[in-house]
Image (cartoon, rainbow, N blue to C red; front, side, top):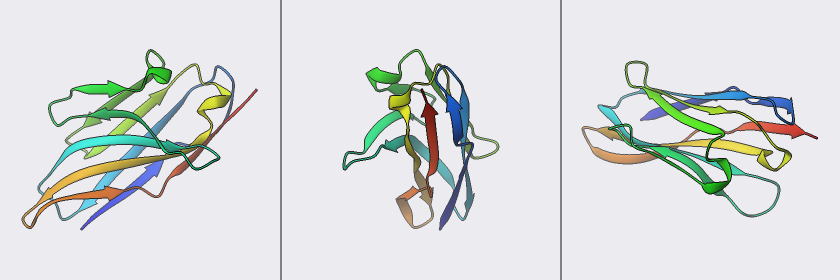
Length: 119
């Protein structure tokens, strides 16, 4: 079982910055890919960024050049640095982790952290 704890959300003004963290703990051998999703008001959830076990990154177009995903494998923690924030970045942000254990590979979700960008 893997527990994910997210932190770093908050309220910022347009143009501000936040850094989200997603720390994994529990019984696992290692972490494969990690993804950040966001769920703004409304039904649609959006994948924002991902990072592979080797460090290959991907970003959705709307955050390219503003967001940076990184991982600290020694701490089992993934970060999402968000700069030049815009009101449309307002959402609940979730990390999604693919973790390896002796029983196989499973998907885990964080509890979500609210990011609010005021205009």
